[in-house]
Length: 588
Image 1 (tube, rainbow, N blue to C red):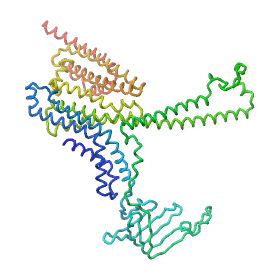
Image 2 (cartoon, one colour; image 1 turned 30 degrees about the vertical axis):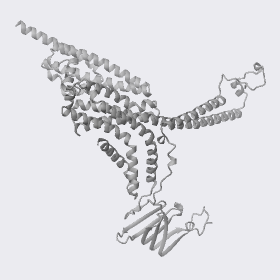
Image 3 (cartoon, rainbow, N blue to C red; image 1 turned 45 degrees about the horizontal axis):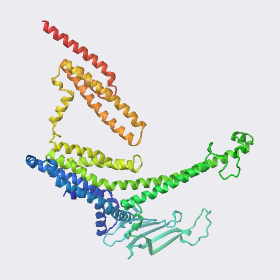
Image 4 (tube, rainbow, N blue to C red; image 1 turned 60 degrees about the horizontal axis):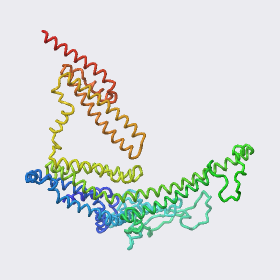
């Protein structure tokens, strides 16, 4: 059920994406049915993981909501043992998904893409609007002021014919016209009544010998009572040949992809060897042997070394100019030749990356099914909410995260920013630890979504501000500020490293930068709350005004180490005044 729902939703997204290419083409029902069938098959890799996640969430959520999981665990059966039959089922589904991705998807991709291209190339149905120039007929513009829906007669018709070029345009104006399609739907036949045709003599072919340099071009005006005009207009649906798509990486299985990668790599290697030879022979290398290996001279020491500068100084100004021009031209030609050869290699390397991406994606679907099951089943056991409410919300959020990460990794791998295996497997590498963590928590009956448990962790790490004395608040404030400054320094260093490095290492530094930045913001909020509590105990809440809060949470976030000394001294003075006041009360 969840697979059907997921596939239907994703198929509706496909429909809205390509609705402009389908509407108004007059496509037959069997063509649309075939297109949606192929589209549904190509969307299975996206719908299957989402369906497994939603189904596992609903199943174990229902078991937890009805206390059936509690009864299972009370009988001495662990959660992992209860999941064993479904683990076997998901493993079988993953194996089937691999064979589907390897054997079925390539054939479906060829049929789907060729059918989609054929539909896009099909001409739209002929529906000429009123009071608007209709330009969907190639080389013709038609204007109809009024259409009689009962008789099909067109009133006040204008036709601009530019089939022989804009300079040889013909214009036809008539009171009415009748339109019909030929039996083979390859011509449009117009019967015009009571009108005129304006065209120059070149367009009519009467005077082809008119000088092209002549500014005056004579024209003809033809007045007619009835005239027939035939306009080429192919309204048939023509399928393109599928062989054009069979050479792409989308139409190959694992064996074919590996064979293509090896062949393309050999071509790139041979081009690199050729380019190195060309660069050595054409470029000036000071350490290169002056005499070729085939030279018959045995005593190479007899060859006199000469300086290029001394040779140029012996030339005249015109000879120098000729030598410089020849050298610049040869250099420019060599550069253009190497750039052209580099474009060929860049295109081949792009094809190799595309083949490698498709090769890795043959395995990611099966692994994603396993990962989503080990996320959904334990999460449903922890949430204990069945039905289509909470499971749908959680599964959609997780799938959106997976989809965004997967697209980012795919584009990074496709563009060569990251290695292919890192980009394609990025989403799996991120979600696999999450699935292992949630499974571990569910097996040990951990309170993963218990707010009180997280509050206890928070109090254990930062302490309970409401139970602290002013001296303890002062000590906690200083401690957390030091931690915050260390975290802020680490964040700055990581920002510099991520800007200096690139690729996977730069992305890794960026992730750690975000983590350290979030940790700093948490510590910043914590020591601000501790300072507020300290002022409250000292009965000086007015010291923290709205203006001071805005300043602290905007500029102070980045320059809090400057404000720290000011706040620390002020709090120390307030603490001293409070202790002296307490001593005075005790003396009295």
